[in-house]
Image (tube, rainbow, N blue to C red; front, side, top):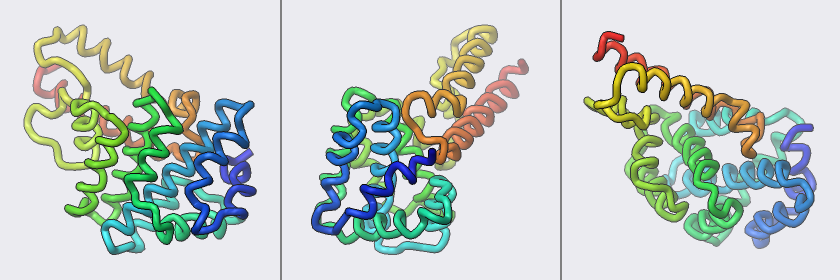
Length: 232
């Protein structure tokens, strides 16, 4: 069953005044099903923060909307509900920092899935070809509220902006002084850990598979750079 189908009742009952209650609603409605609760919570987080980022930027381009739909893989029968929820989030008087804290509360002590949320937001922010200054400020603040470590956040940013010399090792979370064999083992481990199935297992819905594909692509590009530099 699609995560959007599970969200149907929550979407249909949402109002601008009570949008923030969706966060608590997801927690209580699926209390007995941990994986579904995480998938629904992740989806609400992405919709809410994407909408707030668009509002912070002041401009919602067709490219951003297309990227939103690409990363969500929204079925036609749920598109109107998701669009309505997106617009309600933009209209809600609560600020994006309040939303970010609620998202953090949905995933206590789970930095990895919060990194997945940030990856999705970067994907949408760069859809028009550039991450604007206000969008970057928004993303920097979200990372701070989420408690993402500076090293991990830098690695996320490098997946979405132009990398500089030496950044391939940062992308791979590797030390340039490691032996070739250790680097190879580390790369294989990274590929396994970032396989789409791993994301799904920790609560990222199948509809968000674009996040995993982009992450793997960035890892492979960084590995190709390292291999070329070292001749391995």
